[in-house]
Length: 341
Image (cartoon, rainbow, N blue to C red; front, side, top):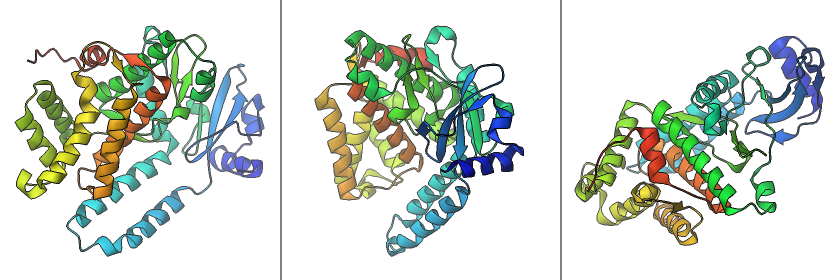
């Protein structure tokens, strides 16, 4: 985005140029965001900040693209899954349009920020509300590096495990305390800070679970931890929007079940879970590829975001070759006190 367009956004939002609002403002963006770009700036207090500026008119092409996608998918309208496809497209459009509203992201970020103490080692940058609007988001600038740079330094296993632990704590706290999925866990949204803390940025693509979705999450965990295979099968059928296992069919039930059990496998492991294990990671990817190849797409719309959340986060910790005591973190963050046999 040319700087003239950056100035235009600031004039529309604040009636002032960036140089008037900040003591210093770098005209060249230093990072890209999903729907905009990020510039470094300095407040008059001297604090360094990151300013995310949205591309002009981004909400219009989101609506237009979703409309065109529905038209492209019209040949599928006679299939049994057409209603489910429309529900999923509506959910995607809702999340994307919310992502285009930076005031919504600012609220998410502040709630998440308040969930952590300095002792947790997880840092969410502070939002500067007076320098933020629907299309501009100004936050504390976090010093650190991204994943590629960290890995190029050949960090010791202890540091890899520490960051994997912090990532797990952060995502679980959001899930179990706020019932939110960080649905865009791309490597660029993690800042590996020089003092060993983990910074998390960009909460635009955040999906809140409704009561039914949260109840399903709790029921699946209970069945899994209780090793109740009959109940697990019932829940897989329900989540896939079928009336019975017979309606779903054995091949689809087995394929979807393999994916779900892989996603939940760390919940069953005591002690250190190795997310860098190639066989574990490959099993999950192969299971998802097969489900996709078979066209088994029917299910609750939230599964789009939970799958994205799990795959994205596991991709990061796989590259980190990190380990953590997943079960212990789960117990602490969820408050689970059950004794399963």
